[in-house]
Figure 1 (cartoon, each protein chain N blue to C red):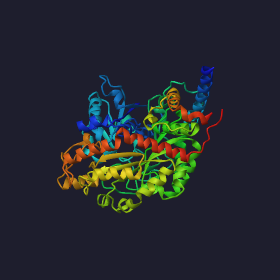
Figure 2 (cartoon, one colour):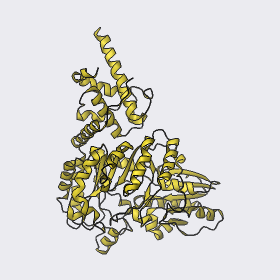
Figure 3 (tube, each protein chain N blue to C red):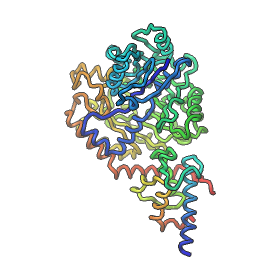
Figure 4 (cartoon, chains in turn yellow, orange):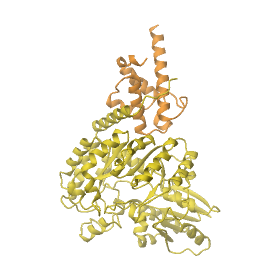
Length: 441
Length: 93
């Protein structure tokens, strides 16, 4: 069979004014562009799970969005986050109209299976491991079932993890290659849609397995920049040290997401730098204690807030930039939160900042709570789950105040003077960190 | 004679810059031309170009104006930027 796997990339902000603002803000645009241009690691895993006797093609939705004649396949697999799900459904409908079986999986399908079934011959909830070969075989034998459920734990204890089919990306203009080292997150933030959907546990891939994937990437690409597609890479101290020791000699440059405990181990910041880490993205969420209170079952982030500044300084002084992430519109946020975030960013000397709007993704505790409280603005707003569009009524401000505050904060943080200041700070830090070792010619 | 001295200095600067860029980007010094965009030709991200800026400042004992830091897109552009702050360059030779 000829199997077509189609990646749904490219989140676009819906609120017109924010979209206009976005194209003029370098910080916002650069991270947005990066996210939009990341390959779909999930589909590369699906490709690797497809029995070798089948041909597999990996394409981006942009390749087929506007074409009259869709590429022909015997089976189409789609995976999508919430924001792009409607476009995935449109594409699925087009393929099904011409008789091609379509299977949809991914985070949104796992949360809204009945909705996805209206546009698919079959759906896969949970991970693709174990179950995808069965799906393919069922298509081959003409006995495709409607629902399949993959595993939601034990991803790395059920045998050696497959190496994603990175070879399918060769020749395509990705500036970053994604590699995953863990599933889930030990924290349980009520707004988080990413980690808990696939596993209630936190599982880290054996370092040797990560190494095998990285070696494959190095074999295929010239000087690849790696984006570790994790929710919380450095949540385990012993694993972190083993992982960084493995990475250092590979000479890679990379980015990842983690939490503030990465700075707890006094040796880790330097190990990060030496291993090629350019940036860690950390969900600080808010500088305000009351806003952090209750967002996570154990109140871990609220308890850590007092150590934010020290941790950021420890990381950045080692040459690792911190991309501090803040969420606006949390239940304790009042209209002065925007100034408070700006002041914190200045005080912390953060070298990169990301500000997003609280977003009730389906399946999260936040979604259930806001729905129960009658605070969702629409019943169905999936294409507005962009992290920059407001989809609910904030508790202590109006929707308009939240939108205006966000725009104001963008302008405060991403204006040219602030960008230049951050560039200068980084250059000065690197001059302190790096020994002069440029070879004399 | 002045022109010749300038030529020698410029060549030396370019050689040193080429070595710095190659070192930061982990490529061979011959792998890019003077007008090649460093970000696209060498797959460098914005932080890597700032690391080049840091190495240039250290090597030539200069301070690149903050508003020029994101303009160091080619070897030639870095040379031009250095020429604009020439007085501080004497220590580098």
